Image 1 (tube, rainbow, N blue to C red):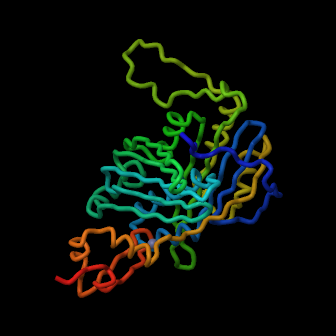
Image 2: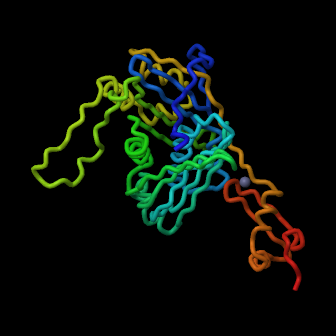
Image 3: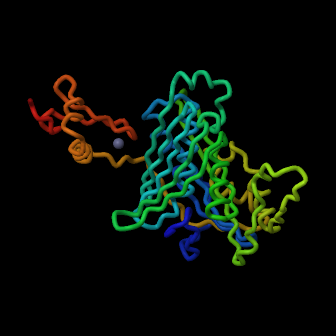
Length: 336
Ligand SMILES: [Zn+2]
């Protein structure tokens, strides 16, 4: 493995500025609670999230689960220091069968979801929970550092749990870093206009002495009755860190009037929290007419011919819904 998710090497020498009471949307704010050996990141999203979700006119439950995946991606991918990509994907058997979020360092995000409208309607009453919408399958996280570099892929099973739970499982099993993740997505109505907002918090316990990072297992498993369950006592600092993080409410994560610094101060002020330079995020697709044209060239002549409708080939980008129109000749369709 050449890279870990996330790379925890936050540069402590980077700019440290005074806590601000001005809320900043579409940014990731790294922080540190040195007294508890905690490091983390706080994401707040407004217009960029709204831009991605409203291009597709998703039903609210789909927007919500894709919003969670987007926030999770920003928490994990924003530590990439190279011109790389972090891609989060889910493939599952629920009404929302496929999610993909593509984060391109340092700040570009795009995403889309596939869902079954009929099944979504059936599930409506209970569909408030991302675990029910997704169902069973897996979550894959890929770091792509470019052509000459190795790819890293982390996989975690989804078994009806939320994306938060999947992230915990991933960090426990694969990274063995004590981690808590919180994700919140909400809809805001102001002046008759609908807007999506979201927020997320990732907190990790990174003590210098690795033996302090021991973790209690998430599930006792289905051991036979009478088996002595091996109990792990967690470090006091991590116990305290988790209990502080557990007090954060969804409304605080998405509140447009509450700055990230104020929120972190609210959570950790007794121990002292330092924030670092925030990393901006933007909704931006990387599709282009040239890229679509070269993708068409990779198709078989028959596939290209099948795409001709009304004497033209129209390709729609699944990420941003942009459409690209080609003549059959431009699309490389040869007349028979
Ligand atoms: Zn696009």
